[in-house]
Every structure is written in C-alpha cells, then in structure tokens.
Image: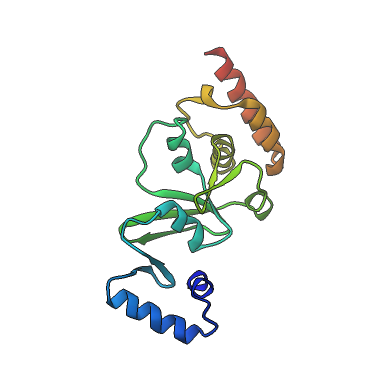
Length: 174
C-alpha cells in the first residue's frame, strides 16, 4: 500500500484505500493479501515473498533448486527472514525461516533482480547448512568454492567451517 500511495502521489491513506477498493472492484487490481496488490494474477511470487516480511531474501531449497544444487522439486518458496512462519497466499506456500540478524542483513551473496532479493547458490548453500548441517546436496560441483569461503565468515559458526571443508573435499574427489 505504501508503494501505491507513493506511486499515485497520495498523502492520505484513506484516499489511497478508497482508490484501491475501487480498482479491485473494477477488476483493474488484484488483492493478493491485506496491503498487497497486483495488476493481474500473474504476479511475481518471489517478489511477494521478499515483501511480506522484511528484511528477507529467497534462499534455501528455492534458490538451490533453481541453480541445480539440489534436484528435488519443492513447491513452497523458502525465504530467509527474521522469523519462522509458514503462510499460504493465493494457494502458494511461503516458508519463512529465521536466520540471525547479522547474517540476514549482510548483503554478500544476495542479488537484487526484478524487485526480488535472491541468494546466489553459494549463499543459499551456506544458509541451508546453517539451518541443517546434515543436509544432503545433489550437485556441489556447480558451487564456486572461493565464493563459499568468502561468505562463510558471516555466519560465525565454527562447526560450519568444519562441515564446509568436509563437503569441499568430498566434491573435489568426484
């Protein structure tokens, strides 16, 4: 709603609300969720994922599957956030996973593409290990290990360093 008020140059929240209601009623806008609107039902779900609770970025299985690091299909969208919560919006499951603030707000390895904050595969790999050190990855050869080791210190977890080193050695063997 704030974005729309800025776009329309509306100072009054009431006027913005009235105009939004009118456009929804006329079919010009689609109400996705309270405070979130789109021009059509064909909106960018990844963009919405990062706007529901901010700060946030798409990571974990969603980013790993897009980059071919894991081969399993996950219909839910996984997001790194300041809270753990699962919600359903317009039939889509959004899985928010809490990650410590110092990691969440560090921009290294997070790209902003088409109004969406998305972890690169190396950051998503580390986020996943941060959450689950025993996670099974399918294709670690596609990772740029220099980038992995560059990002690793932001987590500040000694046991993670050991796990990453073991996975690096395993991926080099294949």
